[in-house]
Amino acid sequence: MKLAQRVGRISPSPTLRITAEAKAMAARGVDVIDFASGEPDLDTPLPVKDAGIAAIRSGFTKYTAAGGTDELKQAVLDKLKRDQGLSYDKSQVLISSGAKHSLYNLAQAFIEAGDEVIIPAPYWVSYPDQVLLNDGTPVIVQTEEATGFHLTGALLERHVTPRSKAVIVNSPGNPTGAAYDRKTLEGIAEVALRHGLLIISDEIYEKLLYDGLMHVSIASLGPEVQARTVVVNGVSKAYSMTGWRIGYAAGPKDLIAAMTTVQSQSTSNPTSISQKAAVAALNGGDAFIKELVTEFDRRRRYMVEGLNKIPGIRCAMPKGAFYAFPHVGQLLGRRAPDGPLASATALAGYLLKEARTALVPGEAFGAPEYLRFSYATGMQNIAAGLDRIDAAVRRLS
Ligand code: PMP
Ligand code: GLU
Image (cartoon, rainbow, N blue to C red; front, side, top):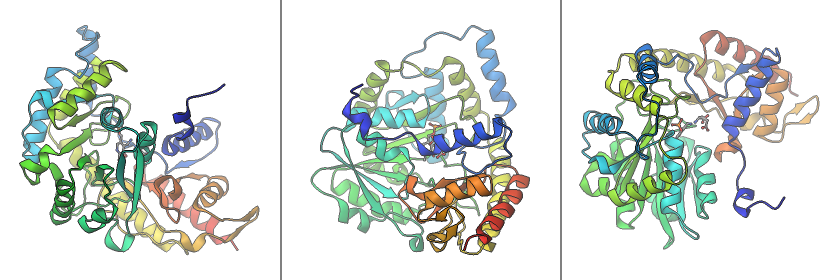
């Protein structure tokens, strides 16, 4: 069948694909340890579930406004005011079926052929593909581990062209756990404003920061920056609600209106039931998040320490999110029984087969000498998985 050309430019989300493979192996009875999943393993908080059940029981099961309910928009406005000191009007908020969906609506409403979107690497897998699906050109800017995998104003400046339309900032970041400080964000904002770029700020890991670090939203740097920024966030990570599919965007009114129109002609509203649950999550206080952060912090230290004990693996301490992102360059080229491991993808394949541990190779994130390990899994799994990997690595010649 002759498919649309745009589909040929993209590939299935590697994070979702590898996670599905690991789950399928487990369902076949294979004892596989999943370090690939990008979702918290803790259950959704009970009051949030109860709000979903109450929505079903009370018959809140019909279409809502395409861009989301007023009640949830108000909860988002209150959250942005409370946490970031940001004021928006309801007309500046869109509720979507996940942050990924908000980002996609944004790409549809804003990007056209020839437009360049500046994406710092290592990047989350969907940024370049969403740009490509909308005929835009992703401009990948390599950032360095030695400088905390940060985009800076100077680095951004070097990649701006007359076709640049937007820059993506993801702090705390997937897959590196990088967290931008205020000064770095000010540098990026200054360059973006000077060149008239839209700043796309993906803040989905906002609540997952360690060692007392505080999240800074680039939009909070001042009214001029806020006017050129779309903040994207959601309830998936902070409230362990990945399956409920609620995310949101807040930004310039005309852009949000266009994104809402796109959504009204594609998916309509996000699930009514999930919207009620998301209101309960956002208005329910931070007790669950505190529990999540404490648990993830313990696992983060344990995993990074364990990874650093494996010969050939070097892992920096991530500042946020729930991923460890070790450098494995020294293992590339080493020999497995089936031949040399020429790439991180080959190494990940070897570890899946020989150590029965699923992880995502760095190529998926534009970082071919790295592997991504999610520590959103139990301590026992982390301990067993690291032992298996250590043994498998020691078998390489
Ligand atoms: N941004 C980043 C950086 C992510 O890791 C994810 C995880 N899927 C998302 C956005 C989208 O999350 P969701 O669609 O579940 O809200
Ligand atoms: N964001 C998560 C990850 O990076 C979930 C999967 C996805 O949507 O890509 O693994």
